[in-house]
Image 1 (tube, rainbow, N blue to C red):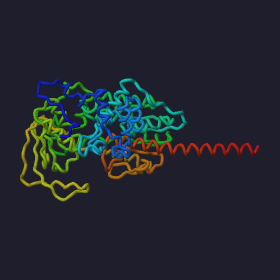
Image 2: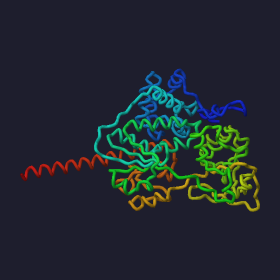
Image 3: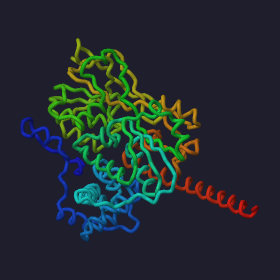
Length: 473
C-alpha cells in the first residue's frame, strides 16, 4: 500500500466516530518537519515543481522549513497557490509532486504534501497575514461560483486592485472543498479559513444567490468589466433503473456533505451498502460508510479494475478499509418494498474501446443475480449544467459536450468579457482542486492584462480629448 495514505486501523467499538473521522495524519512536529525537509536534495531543475499545476517553488519552501523560516515557507506556497492549505491535504501528490520526486526511484519521496500542510497550518495558527488588497483601479469583476477556481481568481484580482464580487448559490463558500471532500481528508474549517482570507482581501461574497435566477447572466456581463465563471458540476445523475425512488438510495455527494455539516452520530448508514461507480467520489462514499459503521460495503462497477477512474492509491486505500469491489457488474434494479432490500445486477463483459479509450461494457446474457443491500449510493459522476450553458450561449459563450470552451492560455471564452475555469471547462484531463486553482490564477492574469490595457487606452483617449479641447480654446 502507498505509505502516504496509511489508514487508521480500528475495530468496532475501539474508536469513537470523531476518532474515525479525524484527519489521516496528525500535524508534523517541528522536529519531524525539519528532519524530513533535510532529506530534500533541493534540485535545481526540480521535477516536483514541473509536476505541480500551480508551480509552487517546492525546493524553496522546503529549504525554508529546514532553516527555521516557516513563515517564509508559507509565503512561498501561498504566493503560487492561495489555497495551499487545502491542496496540501487533497492533492493527489502521488500522481504529481511526490510522484516526480527524484528520491522516489530507490527511496521514499519527500513528503511534500505533509510539509506543505505543516507550513500553512503553522501560518494559520499564528494569524499570519501575507497579502493586502491592491490599490483600487476602478475596475469591477464578477466571479460566479466560490469553489477553488473562483476563490483563486477573486483573490488574485483583489491583490491587483480590482473590486471583486463573488456569487455563490450555496449558504457557504468554498465549493467542493467545503461540501464535497470527506472530513478525514479536509475538515470544513480549513476551507472556510481560506474563504475568510479571500474576503479579507476585500472580495465581497454573496451567498445564496444563483446566477441565472436571482440575477441574470446578461446583467452581470453588462454591469461588470469582466466575468469569471467557476461553477462546478451539478448533482449525481440517476441510475435510471427501477426502484431508484426507494428510501436509502442516496446521492453520493450529498452523503459526503453530511459528514461536513452534520453531527456524525446523526448520519444514517446501512449495514450492507452498495456504492455504484468507481471514481474518487465512490471511494470516499465507501470509506465513509465503513467508518460510520457499515458491516459490508461493496463498490459495484460495470468495467474492470483497469478502467476505474479513481487513483490507484485510492483503490488500495479502500481495500485496506475493508471495502470489496465487484467488477464487470451492472445494477439493473433496486429491490424492496418502501426501502432498499437488495440490488439486482447483471454480469458484464468488455467490448471495443469507447471514445475515451476505455473498453465498453457488454451485457452477458442470462447472468442476473441479487446482492443483499439496505443502502445504495449513486457515485457515477455529475450532471452538466446545460441550463446555464443555454443562457450563456445567448451571450456568445460557446460550449462543447456540456463544458465551456476556453482558450487554454488565457481561460477566455468566445465572449471577450467572460472567462471560465474549474470543472465547468474540464472536458479532458484531471478535474481537481489544484487544477481549478491554476485556472483561477491564469484567468486573473488574463483579466488583469486585458482590463489594464483597456484602462490605458481609455486614459490615452481621455488625455487626447483633453489636449484637443485645450488647443481649440
